[in-house]
Each structure stands twice: as C-alpha cells, then as structure tokens.
Length: 114
Length: 118
View: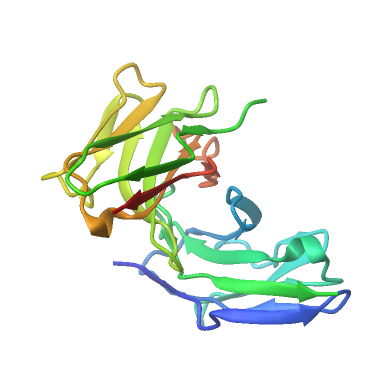
C-alpha cells in the first residue's frame, strides 16, 4: 500500500516570508500524480498544485512551487511571499499511479503571522 | 459553476441513532468519492463510485455503513447505528473520471459534513 508522510505537524511563518512544507511518499509505480491540497479552517479542501511524476520540471503556480525529487520520493511545497490567507492545513497526496485514488498525508498546519 | 454540495454541514446525534449525508457532485463528474476525515488527520477513502457503480468500497465498514448513487449523480452515505468513534468529518469529492488525459487525478471537495455522536 502506498504511504504519504508529512513530518511537520505544525509550522509558522511571518507574512511576506518563504516557507517550505515537507512530504515523502512511497509507491512502486513509475508514473503517478502528486498533489498539495489546502484546507482553510472550516472550509473546503482545494487544490494548490499538481505534479506529474514523468515530468522532470517542478510545477509552479504563482507563489507556490514544488521541489520534486523522484529518486528520493520527496515532494516539498514552497510558499513565497506568504500571506495571511495562506493559513490552513496543507495535505500532500499521491494517486500512486491509480489515476483516481488519492492517499493523503496527515497534514501540516501552517500559520502565517502578521 | 456550482461546486460539490454536501448536507447537512453539521449533525449531532446520540449513539445508536441513524444518520445520513447527502452529496451532489459537480455536473458532468462521473466519479464520486466519500472520504472520512478524523480530527487532525488526512482524509481516508471510504468508497468510490464510477457513475452508479461502487468500484472501490474496500474500506467501507459494511456492518454499519452503506452508500448509494442510484442514478449516477447524487449520493447518500448512511450510518446505522452510529457509534461514538464515528464522530468525524465526512467529505464528498468528485472528479471527471474516464480516460486518462480527461482525469488528471484532481479531486473537487465539498465542505464536508461534521458528525458528532454523543
């Protein structure tokens, strides 16, 4: 069974600074998707960024970027110029090559301080 | 475009009572998921539907949980009887499904139904 591990239960950052959230995963597949989802307090989970494993280039979405290390099975999320609205739980997830079934990590609670 | 709609948002019941949650996915999304999210944890899959067919229900506790998606659109998740340990958030999600390329694996989530069992 595939696993996704987030080793940082909580993190905090000052507004406008940069923070990196860590994630490692385990899968025997060669091609798969990796995701970072954001879950604000009492609000729905939304996709932040997606990475296809066969693409070597790291995905970027505005202030959000990933550092994908396939051999190390590492998938970290970097948030630049942190904003108060970035305060949320962040979940790393992998589809393990299934293209439909996501396995989530336990999440990292990120607090952005003014 | 309307997102995934779930109801009720909150439900408080006593143990041994039944409870049901409803989900309406994004229009055109063939695949529907029910996830369980315990406090401080990531979501865990309970059941996945492709249209009206339950194609993955291996983690659904079938002694007390049931689900249906009769017309391949909206879905209901039922617990009967509820136990104290069922207190959690029940998330519904949908995706395009179908051929690779149409489905990039992205799930669209509802706001969840928070269940408290007393």
